[in-house]
Length: 191
Image (cartoon, rainbow, N blue to C red; front, top):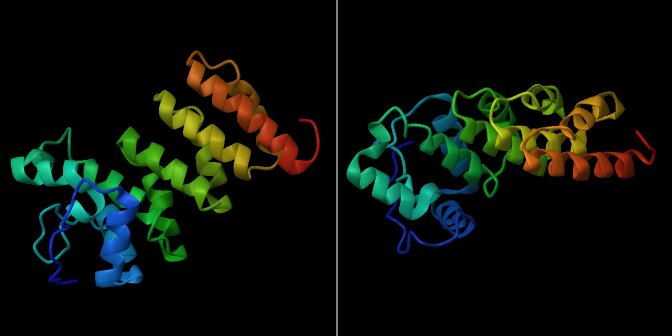
């Protein structure tokens, strides 16, 4: 996609606003396709044929592009994080396979953001991947996965949520309590 998209006038706007503005200029499908390409195709963060990352990453993206920070291996995950987050506002069902892939990303931030989006979009086909993430080494990923199970899983996953009640990280245990209550309510039975 070769684009002539001007930079956002205000990069401090909420990501929802920035993505909405990008969709107004490029079209919803084109923004979603760009985000999927960032996740799957590994397009460069400063590819001149693509829109500026500031449309999905705001001021942090503008600063990272200006300083070249995204070229550092420990910072290269940010375009994928921003792409997943942007898909929250530019969702298309064709993006589901990219979210499945993001759930296995090497960056915990990408995995966490993808788990949150899978829950928001109710991507029940990703429940098994979320179940696996309940054992992730990063507490924030475990918490997001447990929340996803509470929102979408069936009774056979209740044991994973119950196990998370004993997680050493209080935020994960709290997420598990809410998730178990949600699962019981949704399935209309005690588990």
